Image 1: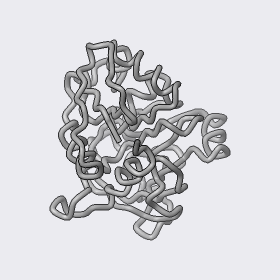
Image 2: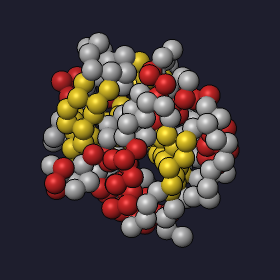
Image 3: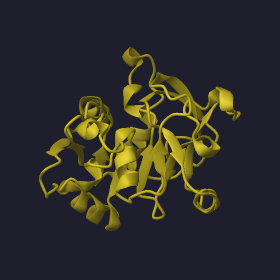
Image 4: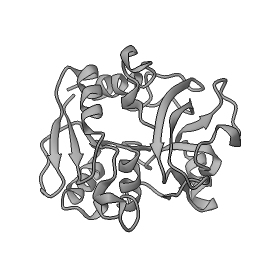
Length: 230
């Protein structure tokens, strides 16, 4: 599997993402600066976490208009897989790759801690390594992770099976006490209609090795490598 990570001014999780991808694939991903208009031929494009353009205007709003994003959207329309994590999820929503918006956390504070996610569907290429109902532990680090969409959109996401991760208790039960940001219906990650773009706020790339304190996130990258292998 060949991959590329798009880097914006203020991105700070590209190295973590590169390590996770290499661990799963054995290949170093290409690092692509946002001001260009070309991407290499790859199987996966990653929009990583950070604070693109200092999070001015709205988180991800300026990144969504970077020159490279026209090509990202074109590739996504062609079926290339796109993984958008944290700030990348914000940018993907602002760019129209995914519905909804990420608002300030309900507590109005930056949240940085481990959370539990319930895998809602086992679906290639992203969650094929997990069984539906599996609960994984991964970190979050964001101020604007409160996923919001209107009721019609939320119902459509639910009905089409596009809600992939929800914040949960370790045993998989749902409740406000386990929702770190107030996201609607405890949503932590969603797919686009075609199923090739995944956006999520938590950082699976930061738990891919026991030395990090756990490897629950590794399955996502292994699943991508298996699904997208040439």
